[in-house]
Image (cartoon, rainbow, N blue to C red; front, side, top):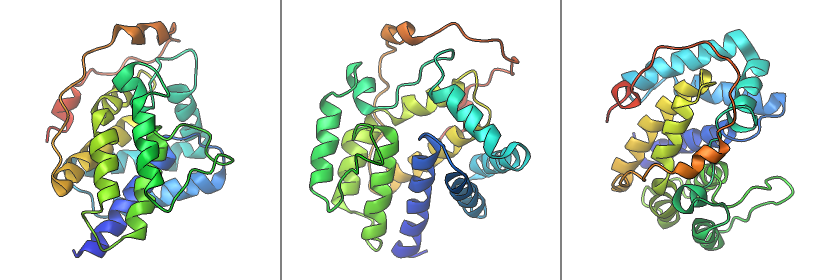
Length: 234
């Protein structure tokens, strides 16, 4: 696989994650997600992601757009379930609109892209914006693996919190479809680190402040407890 082909696949992955962790609102977005999952599942990175792709596709085929939107809302927007932070600033500084937003904004300003506030109202260090920005940069410079804006976005911002974010998604009490997405994302991030020669960040300390956001949860079917690192240790 040459650089252009590799970057096309990387861009699809980043675009998929950018859509999945945003607010899913219409059929076109759902169709794009479904098509990307089906495309990437044809050449999974490893056996863990192969199984996760199969499970994710099965979920969408059986529960459709309604099932995806319901789970997306329960995990990322419902006040009755465990809160998952979605910005780099929160993971690094325990608040939104922190230094990581400034760093990501400065990286964006070095590119030809700008955030369209009428379409995307979240901060520049929001996980969805970072994924979407990386997708655009890779598509724009699709023959270059070592684009400096990609390296800076990944190493200085995304890499500082993505492992904890993935773990939060995987372990969320409402995570079914998204548990498989967490596995796919973890495998992909490990591949990106190897490709860009970036080491995994040291694990953040567990923050007691998160307990403030843990609302009383509604009842749910208990699933067998699994260690995330055992599911896909890389």
